[in-house]
Length: 357
Image 1 (cartoon, rainbow, N blue to C red):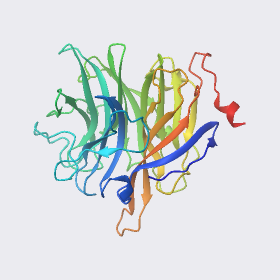
Image 2 (tube, rainbow, N blue to C red):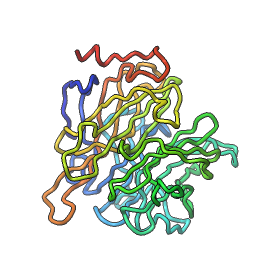
Image 3 (cartoon, rainbow, N blue to C red):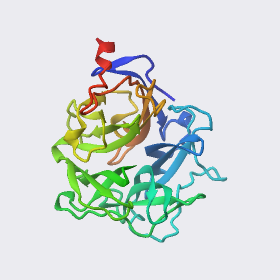
């Protein structure tokens, strides 16, 4: 593991350290050459756990994988063990028993764990939504899920969410979901990275399979990517990324941002103040960052002691060919205090600025 110990103030935020979690070129991370990123963090079965996406050998269609900490270990960047089979190879998180083609040759990408109520079964269920591509790694994508049956993750023959609006331009991906107020609520990306066109959408569903009206949550000019929402103390936190998809110098707003709101609104303007927590500058093993997933040391606390944000990064390599980069997974440790001002609620004043003056 590698990090940058010591406190730093960034835009009023107290960043304690950034630490590398997985890197295919760093044997100390335990990835053993595998490229695994796109973490989605959850506490399940008595331990911290993450769903991942990547390539076990650095090539071929991407698969979903998992890693976990030992029971009793606190959340943090160290100690993560990738799930492997008896032969030492990475074990895919879910099989392909459904015989689906929509996520076969292009692989499975950007998992998002969520627990919600299944009206049809009358039971709480765990699902991992993800984007799949039929032919190419770069899409176009549709969104589906695998579901936990008590023993294993079970796949589906068809996606549950395909692009249909003109502004979605034939591809939907990067889902992030919560179950709230009797509904499955999803924020997602539409468009194409290759065309430098990304719009953030929002939709709701009663069962997580049939989705209602879709609307634009953030327009293409914002370059929003991955709007991850978590409930805490009766309020809602969101960490999202703003990306730069061209080869020129990225603007200063590129990086990770944090918001807090009284409700998980489907309109961006209703969320209130946003505060940048990570920018482009950082350790050599990550350019970015993007695809955040986060949790607090005490999810029920109004003012938790620590905030952990996991994210993707990109590291330049000396490899020949058109893509001399490797994907990495990192973790930022922050002291959050109250965080950004909560929309419509003055009881959450910002403490960052007082500490960093």
